[in-house]
Length: 428
Ligand code: GLU
Image 1 (tube, rainbow, N blue to C red):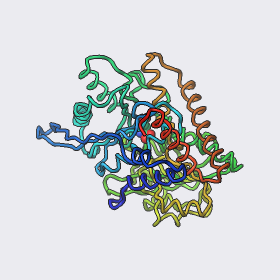
Image 2: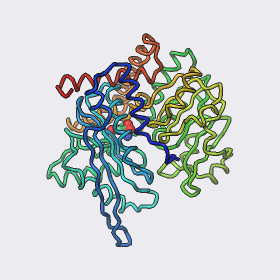
Image 3: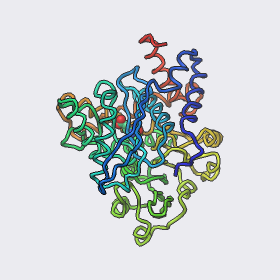
Image 4: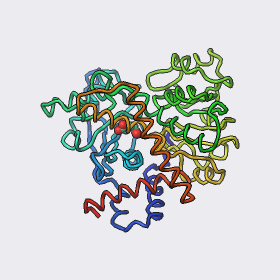
């Protein structure tokens, strides 16, 4: 899915430069924010189930911590690169800033394919990652969380290793933990629900009722599944979903014009969000090429898979009906595709605003973990709604009054907040 020639860090830097120009930032602030403040690269030797040793490459990048401890997920992906992690860490800085939570931006990764690792091997990898970097991360330094192909069980193994090394209980070290083991109710729904809270607000602005809309979604992982759930509760209909097929090493789109059935799709999906092509066909879904999700006659597109998916090459294939793109994934749209989106006047809810629900709920989880007092699910979700709605309205008001698109407006707000924090601390 990730095209190798594409470098997400270059995209992230281009987007930052644009915001820096709009804000007329001085050179020192640009130099500071254009690159991560700190990065860690390391090898993780693991004993595999066949008793052979295998060495994996791991990373943790802290882009900026002026507003609070670095915060961001950890990805397991065979095509992981340091530049991908750098880009993602920078996007986390803007995400925590736009959500206005007291955290910075970080990201981690391991080059591996968890499809091919046993549970025990995955546990060793999680523990090995923590052993390599535990001196440089922690509840008041840098707080990891789940991301692509990592889950609450991985977070718990990491917490256990961290607490063992430190010799004390420190549940605020990591978020996205299992409920009952320091996790927050609502955390697993938070990112997908947050995406739809922003879609709801965008529809209000465009004066469209959700029940008059159709959507197409890329990916069927955690973000996508909960986005579909809330969107359907609002009355919308999803007609197409795409997902990665591990066997064929490609993706497919699955279409049902009457509307997909979430429960049915979940019943034929593996833990990594891969929908079984054979079984879904038996359920009456059309099987289409991977990119077909983008070409559907829908009002709303939700890319919720990986970076670099809507590009200069395929953006023209979007139907003229598309009115909103809500980026559930990080970095799904390239600057070339943005030109097409802007020309067509499509309302874009940029990634670091649209998918900020996950980290916002992670922040709630940290607060709960540190207080050792846990809130009810409704309480968590209504606080999430308040935060996401406020972030959306701040960006859309700013966009309107300054005649900017939503991405540029979100960038200007976030970069300005972070630059100000750096200045206030005397860093630049
Ligand atoms: N991995 C998620 C993201 O990209 C969540 C990060 C977090 O909860 O810290 O926003």
